[in-house]
Length: 416
Ligand SMILES: Cc1cc2nc3c(=O)[nH]c(=O)nc-3n(C[C@H](O)[C@H](O)[C@H](O)COP(=O)(O)OP(=O)(O)OC[C@H]3O[C@@H](n4cnc5c(N)ncnc54)[C@H](O)[C@@H]3O)c2cc1C
Image (cartoon, rainbow, N blue to C red):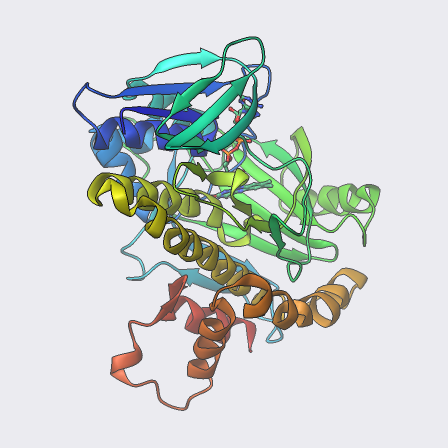
């Protein structure tokens, strides 16, 4: 572990470079942080889970209050669902303990800047053509520079160009594949002398063509319409987006981007020398903000295994770590896909497609024969627990990517 490279400077690459700096504080290693400044980071990704609050405190050595202010952040206590499920009532999925545990709504660009301040690395602005495992490490091929050998490479280059069944598991039971992003004036404003203490929630509002997220930061409010471009046209979505903003009292907005996305997990997240992290490793639609927390887990597991286990165990550990990380994403996927299983207040083409055609695919897509892991069995166990008249105390700490309390709140709220 003398030479480490992180390729990519989005959220995932920035977290990895800062984590290497923190966990290898002595200077007898070399960290190369490589990125192509002509390829912008995706920049969305403004909701998180509570573990990020602790992690940013450790990585930056700054008090929580300062971190929150630097991120132009607010405190996210959960996700407020509007119009989801069969009960026709709004409900909140709180982090546990409810009203105590919070995450951040944050500016992704500002978080990357904050992490870079504490990172000690040699920066290389170049296009990477290939990253491959070689005897005893990994080799990175550059455009216009000689190749370099490393002991460990984090590949954080974002979404793969295309999915291939040999390399990627298609999370085909998620019914959305595109987002339209708009930015509107802030609805929560910075208080002089301290961070915003007000409890805030990501709103997840069901709409005829999908759902809209509303994320309040102190510099702006982010709105995103998440939909399926094979079911609804962009024009239909834009028109419903306009109608939503009008009823929400938002009179001005900046159109930011239309982002197509895949729902997948790479079969080989970690091979002992190359660790895919962030959107290069896996992605699913942002309903439960599962991307940053997955990147944290990927980085933390790989670094802890490499730093705390004898070097001769690397080849034996790699498949175990890989299976754990793939399993974790699939469990998140099943939890997120299940949100669609009871439909919404809209009996539209999108919601019929999501509920009746896409979600029923989950048994085949997550079959252990296809995925090589037991995510489906664990998910089934959680649903079985939800259906019991009494949940015994010894089961209260069970989890399947998220805790039992999350399943219970969603089950109650959705009516399934
Ligand atoms: C609509 C939407 C909403 C989202 N909301 C959330 C949310 O609320 N919460 C959440 O956790 N996540 C969310 N996400 C996920 C979010 O994208 C990720 O959390 C996060 O941005 C991770 O991105 P990344 O760092 O993996 O990749 P990117 O941001 O794409 O960064 C890729 C980096 O790699 C570099 N690069 C690429 N190719 C090369 C190359 N060949 N050579 C050298 N460098 C290269 C680029 O320069 C860039 O620096 C959302 C995603 C979408 C699409």
